[in-house]
Length: 188
Image (tube, rainbow, N blue to C red; front, top):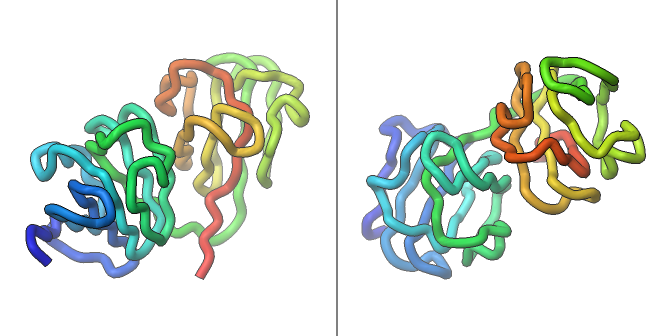
């Protein structure tokens, strides 16, 4: 295929994503099989994506910043298919396979203050379960999760990896408002 380049050198068959400059998998293409903090030097725009294997987050800006989009195996012939606002993709991160339990604590206040609730399953409405609209801090103990701006898994997305998030800006948000969240479950 013309223009295809493996950006990371070593290929991982469990994770492979191909970026295309034009819609419907046309134009120059770039193949990636691991995290890449800056894709800008490899292409100027991204109008379609093919996920060959694995689960991925693609980001609007370098260094895993800006709008985030969760992608699973499949074809995305134009940026609207991944709910993108434009043809700007500047970094990508593979989401490792997780086997085992899922556990996350959310907090009403920054720095793990105020009301706390622990979750081990999906939550289509944060307010219905937590009785607050805002999550100011979070501790992901096990598994990988997605926060959504609105209820029922809609709106902006935020990848939550195991670790401590002392304030909402730590997961890339401009606001503490989270409407729903769910586990990233791997299927065969």
